[in-house]
Image: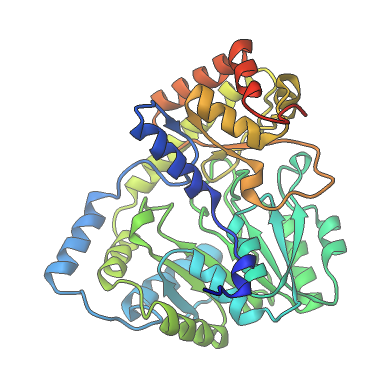
Length: 411
């Protein structure tokens, strides 16, 4: 059977591949601590679950509008207007099942074959995957540790050409936890205005910040008309399985994205939308408590990682990921790269993490190694994971045994 060539351009989200590995090892009786997957470990708040039960009892189980329930879009519009300091109407909102469709539909609607899209590297792997799948040219912009994992605006200017049609920004950022300063966002806005570019602003972690609040590029003059905001309920309300996300965009684009929804998903589940609306309008204590827990765990894991020889970890400003530089650890142990360190920690320490290869195609000049730790688990799990990592890296016998099983493993 012939498969369309375009499928060769489609990537994946490696975190789910690692999750499959973790589950396989656990089924064999292995004790694995997973700090790989990016979802809050806490459960959805009871009042949100009750709202879904009430919706089911009211038979909210039928098709809804492809663009989303009008009442829910009203709530979203009010929330976005208040939090981004822009005017928003419900006609500029499209509700979709999760955050990924906003990426997919926006790129399909705005990018022609051969158009260039600048995206962050390291970054959420679906950016690069969707650009290539749509026939665009993915132009990586490295997020440098010395810049706090923010864009270097000078490098961004060099990356924009006559073929550039879109810039993707993500703040707070996955996998680094970096936040783009307001001054940099302002320069990005000026660049977008000058070159007539779309900006896809992934703000899914907006409410998970610690010292510095996250800003939106949409706030600057002229940017609302060319910004697509991606947001949703997965991270903020611990609702990853409910599949509720939304895009905020100019009305003309929203019409096209709605048609893509009609042609693909028909609509987002009606009872999920009702529960998500109640989540936004109900008590927010569960969000406040969750972010406070993340802040405590951030400090715990960063201090622990910096106490491991060969690791160096900046303190993330948002999201729930630590992204230590492990270059010295890899070189000292004779591991080729972060992919091998990821495998070593899984097999020898029983700790699942993600190497930097999970966050975009590496550039030839890359000479630093990083791994991502998701600190959504309990304090106890984090402490035990840190203990295992530290002990496994200092156990020369384990390292030697692992290297012996890896052909061409030594760098």
